[in-house]
Amino acid sequence: MLYPFARGLFRGIFRVLWRWKISGLDNFPVKGPVVVVSNHVSNWDPIVIGTALPRPVHFMAKEELFRYPLLGNLLIRLNAFPVKRGQPDRSAIRRALEILGAGGVLGLFPEGSRSKTGELLKPQPGVAMIALKAKVPVLPVACVGTDKMGKKGSFFQSFEVRIGKPIEYIEYYEQKLSTKNLEIISQDIMEQIALLLRKE
Image 1 (cartoon, rainbow, N blue to C red):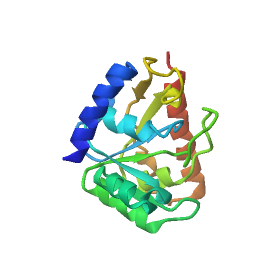
Image 2: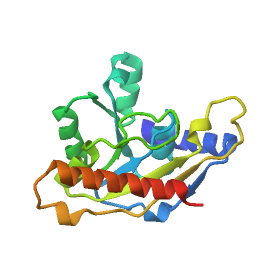
Image 3: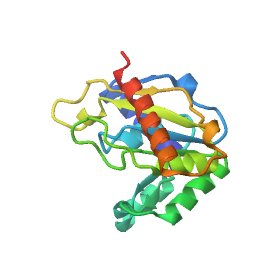
Image 4: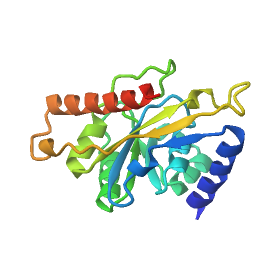
């Protein structure tokens, strides 16, 4: 019950205070598993994406956030789950695959952390690995202007969520999970996000 309530609440807030825009919503799959990937320039990004998309999104979030009981419990109720950064986290990967196996929507930030400059960072291989293991499409999303949210004078300035077309890396599904293939797919994912960011 909390997720739909929070989504409705933030829809109103974003509409009134920031005049937000959503483009490409018709690209979002109405059913079936999908990995949503986005650039990451603000702490608002998961909230913005989760509010913009019509299906519940399960975000992988850094483990440190779950160390605070109240915040951790809230994040869990909002479908988030922890991941240990800087090392392979089998528990988080297993949880991600369970979500996709059940036909859910998984939310990931390929860069692994927020970009303080707004420039795209080097992608981590985890997104590509999960998408290939689960054999599911990847949906690129771009958050434009969310880095200004919460800053002085930001109210009533618009920001936008741009949703691209799903990508399926079918030709790699039966291949070995090699470092080379993961790098190719990771770079392609970031290029798709970059294209959305450059779109006028």
